[in-house]
Length: 131
Length: 414
Image (cartoon, rainbow over all chains, first blue to last red; front, side, top):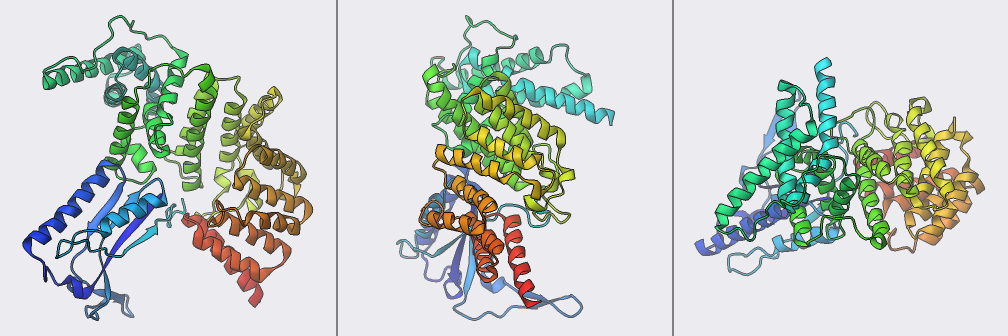
């Protein structure tokens, strides 16, 4: 069963490195790298990506000719997707356990951030061909 | 076209030979994990060389020779790496090199690949590679995961087999029937994975349903007197026979009742019916034979309205007595509704609502929706179709359930 783990964060928290010591930041990165390695070795990873900071994000809509209109102003305090993992696991409980591991990544004070991780099952069957 | 069919036959031969060659190498070196790698490399070498240089006179001896050389290379490099020979697999010189068929070999390997120490997903992957002869890339693509992930899963599975010290021999007679059930369960899951993830005419080389049928056929040839093996093969054939009718042009699911039966594969149906008809009188009736018999009753009906529901209900009665599976109880309720009316089915379903194994399952809501629709309770049917749609993890199925709900809703507007 495939699940996507969505790591959401508030825009206000995304100021690059605000309030983080070098040591705390390195501990955080080391933690994420270790999880990545674990999931690769267990044969459970399908994809994992980190995303650019929200100030780089643009909302795109089509205008009346189908051409893109971009919009880049987002309210403070809005939630942003910082990154995601897609995993293929035996049980829902295993997906939750991995999400809890990710959630506990160390923060600026070295204590677990306990970030909320949204867990959603990935549907099987391709939408286009129906197969 | 000629080239293509040649390549196909070469590939077929390669995959038929995979378990036999693997058994020879495992018996000689007693290192399942390394032997499996060596055989896969030999098969890849054959896939490159045979189309260019033509078939060797004895393909099996050719493959065995290449695999044994790879194995010898591996042992040599491991030996120099460890500076010690003690821990490294060494050929058992006393074991004669056989290139004769040893029928039990494939079965012994199957028991190893479906060992209870493995998780089901590992057993599935290992079976497809070691017995099915599929490449890691093909298995990865069938399960829509990256090749590196599948490679890791297979390598861990092999390590588990290695570490548990399972000897390369058939399980004892006491154990065998239980272990065979585990093998059949793995093959059944491979079939289902293929069946639910693909419908319609699109066929891939590594099509899992067809691979499961091929493997079930191998087991049936090895255990022709086991009625449950025959039952499983029959169930697969009778279900897969409806493949072309299961999906519309846009890939949308078409339920059994509305399928164009002229698209069903009559040869496959005939083979499945013959298998299950021969198995049932042997007196050891099991769940696969009963499910095959039910599929056969559906397949024999020229039209949906000609379906012999009383017979299907009788078969589900038997199946329900034999297994505690709530899905069986759910299907039994459908059959009861078709014989005695939707109210009877709804009543039976009510009793299932407290079953925790079904509580969050979309099938319960989907079946109730269907029966409510038959009973003419439109509003309730729409509600249950939508709730089933929210719970299924299959996109085509969700689209189907939402379409049913939307159609009922617009009927009301008209």
